[in-house]
Amino acid sequence: MNVRRSAAALAAVGVLAAAAPATAAEPSPSPKVTVPAGLYGKGDPTYDGVWRQSLTLLAQRTLGYRPATAAVDWLTGQQCANGSFAAFRAAPAKPCDDKVRADTNSTAAAVQALAAADGHGIAVGKAVDWLKSVQNEDGGWGYYPGAPSDTNSTSVVIGALTAAGTDPADVHKSGKSPYDALPAWSIPCDQDGGGALAYQADKKGKLLANADATAAGLLGALGKGFVARAGKAPAHDTCAEATTRTQVADNAGAYLAAAVAGTGHLKSAMPGAEDQPDFGNTADAVVALAADGRTGPARKAYSWLEKNAGPWAAQNGPAAYAQLILAAHALGEQPGDFGGTSLVRSLNALGPAPHMDTASKHEEKSDDGSGTGVWWIVGVGLVAGIGIGFLLSGRKKQQP
Image (cartoon, rainbow, N blue to C red; front, side, top):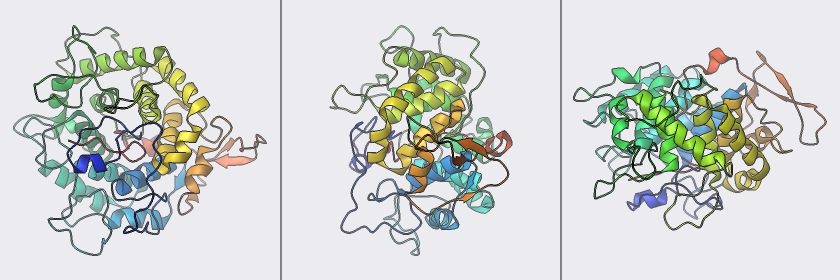
């Protein structure tokens, strides 16, 4: 459900990354990779094409826009015959072969976007069937089929299942559902980082608190995906043994709320990164905290983003703008007036123009404060079930 992942190139060489550096710009196009028509953003799509497109389409739908046909067609054209998606296929007309590395995160993100786009039930169904086919015996998913399960991948798939109208609790492997997998990554309350979630256990079996995984896992435990609205406040606010998904969520929500209480933002968790804010993970935390009913901490983090995240979004491109729009949506804020800038116009300018949905509209402030712009909000019924899983592109993928 950030520039939640580091430049996914790291994953290709097997490096675990918790989050992209907050100052990293969107990658420049490779001399060998042409950014195709219909795809949002100008950066090299090799590692995040499907992810950033999916977040973009979802963000547009929450605003009440109907994504451009060319944008949706580009995404559906990336699907392999078996239903899966890779991060990017430069030659989508060619059948997928062993060189195409389909992954659960790209596939789950595409499911959420296509489910929201309407009229793509066959593509969504095939993708869900593929995700079910690569579920691990612990009930979770790894980034690539056969890889050990991790919090982020499991959570983004939960969001996809929910968006497709499938109860994640009913998706089993060896008798275990994804909800059974999440408690294994919840750090015991009496340990450092208690209540947070780890991405995976390290080689020694130790769990290390990861704010990105915690935000993703919180949404997963709530059964939500990339798109969420403020939920009911949790019944319990103290850390306790996480044997159920409800307690996983309670623990994770309390940890995230405490993490943003001081500065209003999360710090970069990428190995070797300087002590600096992580804009993408903070945006994800806003969505997760809002979904968990912790609107006070969520609004504090959103206010910090309004004051500081504009340059980051301009650098990182469509997924970053989409993350901020999804954060605004979760709190009912107006992304057309984000610290004096319109996230809506900024995102839509990066690709084919979407169509305005005349079913619902709402006045937004224009960039010059004149109040002449229009932004579009879809009713609750349109987005119910889309979910939010968190996220890859703007916050690009965390992979094993």
